[in-house]
Length: 120
Image 1 (cartoon, rainbow, N blue to C red):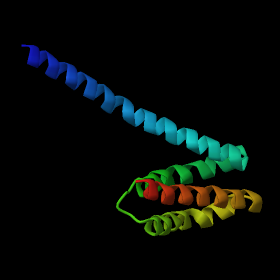
Image 2 (spheres, rainbow, N blue to C red):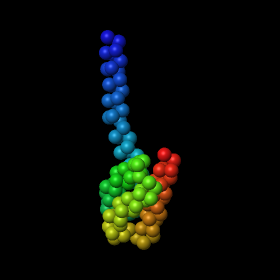
Image 3 (tube, rainbow, N blue to C red):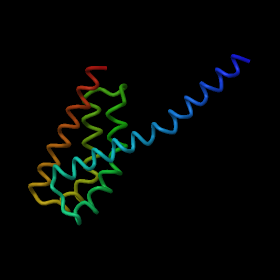
Image 4 (tube, helix red, strand yellow):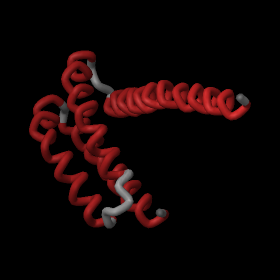
């Protein structure tokens, strides 16, 4: 009986984690998108166009960053390929100064991904 109760308690704890974890990842991603929006000083019209592009890009970027089997060079190449997919749209939406700032943000993400590999 004690084992049965422990099993139920473990299942409840695990279920709670599974339910809450995706929400925290989504909140973290939303916070990152909001921070980028503020750094770029986007207008409401720009936000409406840029944030969906970044939201679509984010899981791909995170997957590359968290892939410990990739070398730093491979991560850099894959992240640049992801960014190049949205670059034409970003250039059309952002001012030249905003686009340059976005490039800096993306370069920082690439550096962090490469460091994450070294630290692994």
